[in-house]
Image: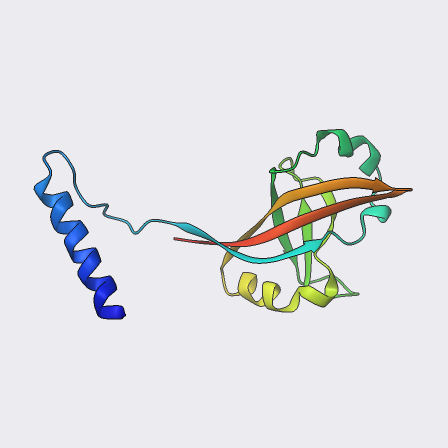
Length: 133
């Protein structure tokens, strides 16, 4: 299978070289690898979340920030909107491997896939991705 992939790639590069004006990229392409889907934890404890809610749109890219000094969870990962405002955390039950990836220098981000209210709870569903270059 690896030989087939290498053969296809070599053929594509040859075609690119032969096509006038086209050159193969110098840098490998980047891709986003889906890791998991989860709910954002702790939204009920975020002061001002009610004011942020109208500005949160499904499909929005969210930032993930590693917080190793968090006293209650050494693998804590904060979920932030595009302006850097806190929305909550990646649930503790799902953050260990993600935290280790981030500690190893990997870039992770989230996409907001769904939001709805359940009483006082702003329920945010996200998908987490590894960005690889």
